[in-house]
Length: 256
View 1 (cartoon, rainbow, N blue to C red):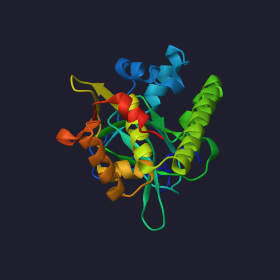
View 2 (view 1 turned 120 degrees about the vertical axis):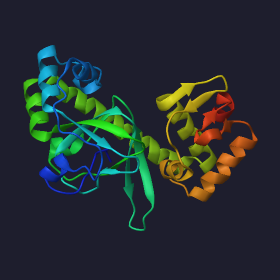
View 3 (view 1 turned 45 degrees about the horizontal axis):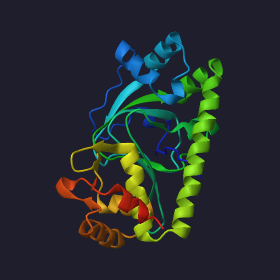
View 4 (view 1 turned 180 degrees about the vertical axis):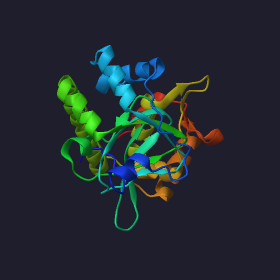
């Protein structure tokens, strides 16, 4: 299963829906935004002229914390590049249980799979905090890929990486207990979103126990007990609604 964005509605709805969020459809093709696109791995091989075309085609949009950017099974017509904030990609079971497949931050992009195969979104995307993205329509994205085929190779690399991550997630569910899964996920989040402080590595994102439970495929009650154990052992702290890893080596040893 690959990670992909999914949003309900037609192409027009996906391109223009704001759900009350402070979004704008103004062009973002200035030098600052060109530099932002140049730092995105998917577009790193583009020449300056192609980057200008890309930036001029993109539109800036904003989403509030908790707002759904798109739903699973919605038509996919937009690629999103994150400028600010964090977005979670997840799926829900028929009984409402959420599984989070990935968390993306500034410089990451999502939604490319539906743009390539024309199929509905395979997962939902939700803003974790205040998010600002650049939205690129499918027609503009396909045009860029046609004229710059090296992007297609990068897309394949990213899809392969995300598939491997999904395989690793399945392996964790099969072979790690809840303590091990929580420990591994905290270490992964620290690598991706960690900020070094005098106390340790703070995971710089809003992360509720329900969010963490969805990331590791466990109940909130189980995760609450595991976090309590890690806090008692001084592996982590949970002050000010942020998780800080205090003893990295000990947490790594708990992955078993």
